[in-house]
Image (cartoon, rainbow over all chains, first blue to last red):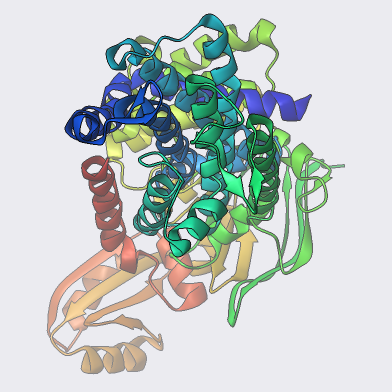
Length: 262
Length: 327
């Protein structure tokens, strides 16, 4: 009971903070929408259709949703480092709640914010001629949340080991941008050079972006956007399982690492 | 029998080669104001960190409210309130929201939560500003809010780590009024670290700590008696010569700090006129005062406690300033 209350309180504070800071919402949307608008419009006419009825902008759209969620959920780590830097973490660390519940609360808080931002990007679907049914949206919510919670846990795990804001920001750039660019947000997975193919497939974000795309654009077994992992054609559920395993390992590591902190 | 709310036995904390806390033992009675006095780096904060479960001792034992700080962390945390040396508020939340967060984490029952928050915010005179974000608070207001927060969950012991560092004298006095009032009303124990002497004098008992060692524990009055009666400070052109003359003429070994010589006499008012008339070495200035804890510290450790104070306040200012610009 104590631990649940701890998770809830930590989560609640992060939501409250986000609410106070609505500029962050707008700010964090600029980047993904810029990508969608500039790349999408710039390249769409040249590239034609990537699959029957799917132009480049439409292909990119689910990727942009994933990218928004991914970038935002990394904030879990930033906010831990931030709290440490500005002293508030001390108040949390001496509270009679377990450290593991603090790690879980931080992850869930950032994941919730990331989910909200993902939903806002969804609202732009009509602009790229994608129509979303209620069921599609309902299916997307848990997928976005899973991606957010997995990446959020990774952020918290890093934040328990990297103490300074400057170092964390550097590591985050080093990790976040490759994860973003090598996750199939901007290009289909077919015909990649070998080195890139390997990097794309060891990147956990790939398995978060792929199911979102499968839900938005349809999950046919012969879709050209499916991932082929070691000769296996990854179905929506296959992707979800890979991401869930990664997410579980990350949250457990984050909780353990936070508890070990002095 | 006295109820000892804090019991510390042979506490040691090492950081590699450095011994930050060196075999410290003491007890604090319930309802007492207990002061930890010493210069920066003496081991005050390290001791507090161990007592509040933020840091583990290398060896030794500490019991708070009957709970072991290593094995029963949760119960210890529930029993104590903390005001840290550096601010630990969420400055993007309002004062009220900061308190509510604390109340939730410490499981203050919902039935009394809002009422208690109101009462305590009124005590520290922040009720009118409760909806403002903490970043718009002044340093003194933040400190008051932290004290309010530390008291919210009915702690048995309130730890105050340099509670008035970097605050102006007026705010310091105000904060002390609250602390004394709250002690009176709530009957809680206050454990305080400071290197301000006037602040330490408000404690019932003082532990003087230097280089991680406990030098002595006693009431401020008895500590001051250690020094003797009145203190004469003489500033002279030639310190060596003046010291020599004091030694020969009065058989007193004066302590020397640069060109100021300090020594104690029984009856200062009568001693001084005679001294000025008969002293051979040229005197630039002379002063007479009652002993303070500064003198106690100097006598016990051979050093001034205030040497670093100015740079301290400066550091606190830079820290505050840095916070505002970086955010």
